Length: 226
Image (cartoon, helix red, strand yellow):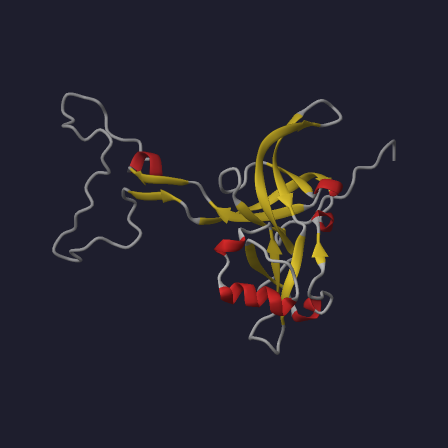
């Protein structure tokens, strides 16, 4: 049985650091999280799954097709650049309505989140950069193959390369999710989340931030003696 958690759309603004009360520096990623608008609610009657569709960020009007303009007109909402679905149980989707605005205050400090996005594209890369191969010794017997991947050949059987063989190829530019990142701070008036650690994608990349499915928020530390 799959577990679905509530989430929000956001944009990566960059990285910085904040300081704890005891003076320790914490590296954080600043994510513009919302405001997002509910454009559509998919329940048992509109498909074989339940979800809410969120819109985020102002679009270039000339880049919108007639079909997507009609989609927003039907929902009677503003137009958005990004549309994403957040899968939720059917009993939870009933608590939302089309046009409802969702902001960063669905998260609190010390929450753990899963952040999904498209990683940075690195182009064509060799096995040392792509798969962290060690390469060959630079001895007199090594003949111009210091950074090669080595032999990948087979005998007559099976006579082919197995799927998944680590070789040179396109690196990055793939959908990735980083799990169990801690929310260090929530700036509600600006809809900013300060998330500890790095998240996929370059500055300006669009992200989906969901409540973590594997980890629960830590209880607040008690002040003073027990």
